[in-house]
Structure formats: C-alpha cells, structure tokens
Amino acid sequence: MKKQKRIVEGIEAETSSGNIFADLGLPNAEKLKIKSALVIEITRAVRKRGLTQEEASRRMGIPQPKVSALLRGDFTGLSERKLMDCLNRLGYDIEIKVKPTTEPVGHLTLAIA
Image (cartoon, rainbow, N blue to C red):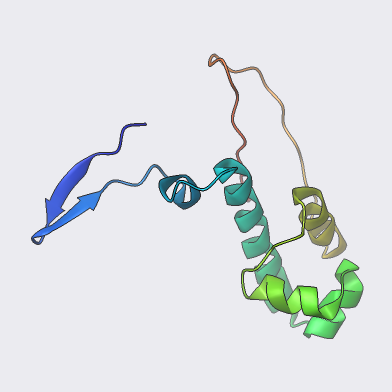
C-alpha cells in the first residue's frame, strides 16, 4: 500500500497502513501486530478477572516477571503459540481459520470477538 501524505494543521502527515509495525519498517510486522493484539487481550483478561501478577503467572504457566513485562507491553521471547496458550489458560477459546486467497501471498489476521 502506497502511503499518502497530506497536510494537517500545517503538519505533514502520512496515512497509516493499519499496521504500526509496518509503518515503522520493522521486520515481521504482521507477526508483531498479531502478538500485540494477543497481549492486549491477555491484559484485558487479567484485569477483568482481577488477577494479581502472581495469580496470572500460575494460571498462564509463565514466570511472574514475564507477566509483569507482558502487562507493560513487552512480549519479547514469547511466541504467538505461547501467547495463545496463555489465553487458553485464562479461559479463552481460540479458533484458527485457513482459507485460500486471491493474492500470491496470504496474510495473518486476528479477529477478537
């Protein structure tokens, strides 16, 4: 997608691609977007359930310092699979849908219900 530039209140602005990681030119931008969405949902689940970091740690099967980092948005060293496992352990079902695309290369997307 070609970025469009425009002037907003005297400041040049670019239209986002919809993926901040891609806009920043980071490698594996689609994976980072998926992982960040999973982390946001984990954070919501922990808060909704009123879990302490220690309780969340036991429930998700990861060390408390990793929970602390996760709740601050640092998901370094955690795979998409491990993040999905954490959500499962917090009482979430995860459904993976695979379908053909008309484009030469498919895309990863995450829909939160």
